[in-house]
Length: 119
Length: 477
Image 1 (cartoon, rainbow over the protein chains, first blue to last red):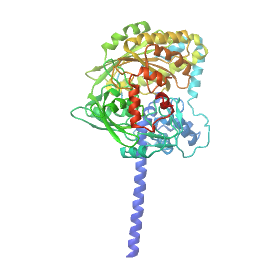
Image 2: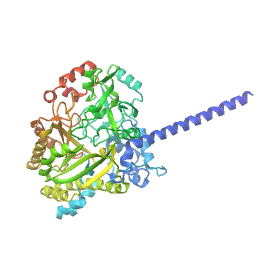
Image 3: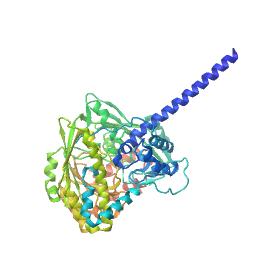
């Protein structure tokens, strides 16, 4: 009985930790998406800006070939028309790294675009 | 300043350059190549407090601490208990040194969102860290819209209000003039709610606060029923633009012009309210293409004239003469706000409205006479007078004239030649843009400067929110 109870407790603990980790990961992913929408999408979803387009790995390959450290540093100090930190004043280094991973990954779906204005 | 509004065509630029076509192409390619990541300098990357730089890169600092409060309670706690110097950052879109600090840098970016809209008054409660671009949609869903907007929409609301950010319109004031109430977290961690009939002196100071009074956590903003607008733009001879400026200003809800240095043309832009949207999505791709083309065209002109400066006027005039009229229709906030992907530095002064054409004319003549190396368009807008102490539009219907240069080109020589012209016409500098004035001159052109200083001293007697630039302009250095 005692052993069963311990096993149950261990299972429960494992499940809880799994849920916590999964929940934590989900929250982190959601926050990255929110940051993308707020700060990155306006340039990284409009090809004419010249910025590497989100979810188009070919655009990112030449950047990432220089290494994540270098790519991250370029984001932090700004490069070309990319402003320092991409204007994300709430972003930490980890947030910026997560955004680079997020945008350079082809697996994302639903590349949202801005509403269009007519002429 | 939106390049995409000036449909300067790169092909026409190159055509005008004649023999410089090949060279121009090569230079343009060089420019694109510069967009690739360069070698990193400095120590190896490690987890650290991130350095700060503004949008254009002309201001920078390394704060000892960065804080991003997730609630007003956290904000109060941080401001109250921080013993170092504290500065606030919005979207880093100010060109003057309002933000740099070696102390604590606080971003209100996480305090964002339109919290509510009063069904009676239509006033909207909006968190200070909300970017202007995030206000349009939620207001529209509730049948409301901002009364006016600047053409850059990436600023935070608290940042926009801090510096009297404005659009254009003879009967329309700045963003600050639409504030009906705001919440201010002081150096002691107290929360003050001020409005036209409550803490009135603080209200008059806080509606253009420079981040010097505390953290503006929440703002109540006047709105109006939602509306559609139509924008029209056309190129006209410079003399015609200067002559017709007052007439066009009075005829349209919004009117502005982009003057071309070294050119004989000026772009007119009007925006008026329209009843029904005639929006079609099919032409927008063309617009995006033209945005790129316009920027590429200006960059190409800049590259060519570095080597062949005598071609500056002919190229600009040839390309400008072939710009076709354009129009756009859409929800008001979508027509006002535009993407800014071309970085620049900027000086802006506001002169009395009637002096606008003469002031602009003298600036353009000076650029030509001194052969100043600039091709970046000069923006010309109108703003209605208000009663805000540090507003450039204090008791004065004004014309704001903005001079720019590319972020990676020297602006100091250009601005040094132009700034005295603004002084001659009684200009007041935009507090968030580049100027060289100290407290003596500022207190002359801003009649309520000393009243602002008195409120600042009362709210922050120990100077927690003062950085070196603020000490200079407040006479406390």
